[in-house]
Image 1 (cartoon, rainbow, N blue to C red):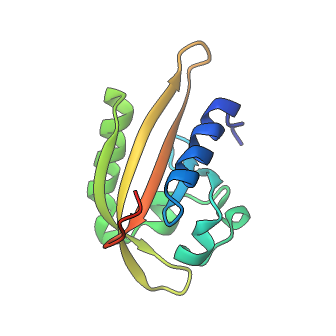
Image 2 (cartoon, rainbow, N blue to C red):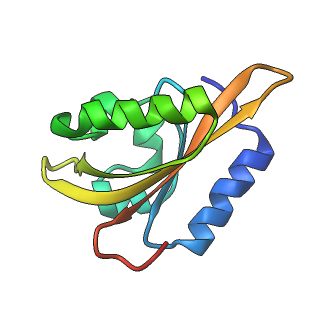
Amino acid sequence: MTKVPADILARAKQLESDSPRSMVAIFAPTGDYLYASQSHRSLLGYTPNELIGKNLMRDIIDPQDLPHTQLAFMDAILHGKSVVIGVNLRHRSGEVSHVRAEAWYIAEPETSQAWLLGRATPAGSDSQ
């Protein structure tokens, strides 16, 4: 599993502090969870530790939203930019909830490593 640099982890913690009702996560470019905020428990039914190693695309994104979500992630990765999309996520119970998801591509040129820092805010929430 890829180790997340302290500065990227600090950015995630700041997003959590700024957006307490949002889920904050750090992903490998493959979509694997490397870090998940505590808010995942109340919003998706998973503890942060249960999400580490799970794949966002395979395990959490609603299958109907997979094509446009994959395109948005690829756009962020290929062009080194951020993306904002509406997407449906699957709760552990099987329920689906709509969120506003943002992802920022972060690359470390010296090591060729990259991460996606993401924040998902429940639809209708003013916490951003």
